[in-house]
Image (cartoon, rainbow, N blue to C red; front, side):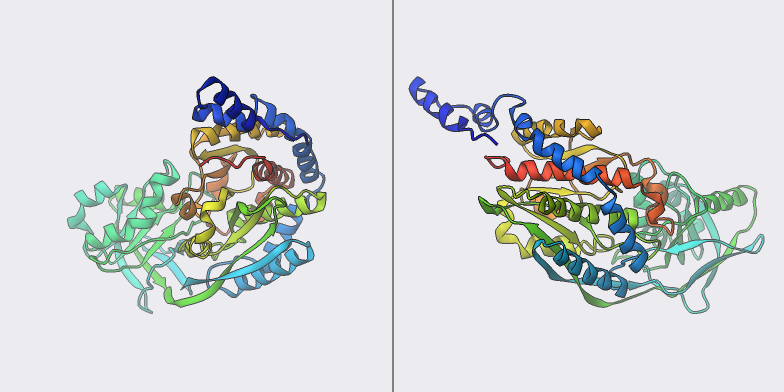
Length: 466
């Protein structure tokens, strides 16, 4: 690569003219004329893309992991065995600074659970308890069901809810809006006097598959059991109520919250040759819910980040700055791994140049969403043009992720991989999150997109502005 000294030239010109450069002029000096950065890195970007697309190594590694260990829920033996395997494989790959950092994580255990409709007819209904919920008495809870479509309707009919099981049958609009029924449904139902609460699974499409996920309690209302049922069954119970039927169910849940246990964040690096103390971090969360295989959410994102640095090692590419791949633990029900990473690396946070997260499924990549200053955004947009060959170069404003959130709050620019996520919430937090939902080529393109972005930002002569 050619060596450029535009910053010095602009500064001397300013001195000669009696004017210092503006911030935008200084940034242009750092990156050169429009398109120069992309031109300089096109060859190496193409090498990374070609290597990522050459085979299905990442997909095969993900398949091996999820088939061997299954789900990787916080507190489970599955998770810890998977972490041991990952660390051993990273060492075999010849990666640098392979290590684990301990994290105390919650330990919620689902136990046996069931939901049976007993009136107006008898039938077992598929269900999943929601993470953090308490259990029922051993004999279960038999009660009449009140179906409502929103928090507002529950509030207006609160006088009908006392002593009943409330079903919040809220249609899916967007994940951000609809998930509030999962997170806060038990609080709203308990405040109305309900003895338990159910939600319509948070999904736009269903094959009678319930979706789990985290919920919360509030200290000023009683804790009641909280579970999800399928879209189809929620609508059936709604119809029964509209037809004037009395609806009764028996809910049984052995769920319990046990003392915290030890888990780990795991990571490996390609150490920078010029500024090893400056870090581009990328990754996903290695834990999953205790259903399915966690292939999509988020085994794929974790293995893709790992593959990025493995490819750099294989191609002999060592950027100026360090590239660190991290698999965070406990994103699903606590974010303990994200907070522990921030706390453990607090002295390094000022030297984190960029954080990249993949937690939307490794489907067809479209580009990245970026959060950071305008000067940095323009640079990222230019780097994005290197991904146009695989139609993954769209850079939009606003992006990040839950696991990089704590360091982004401390000023680190962040970005999230954007993918064609039409099917993501079909399988999200269900038994259907299995490897067959992913495509080897699409995952390879996700690896390529992350690899180009991470390498160029890590190797640019000047660090990405904050």
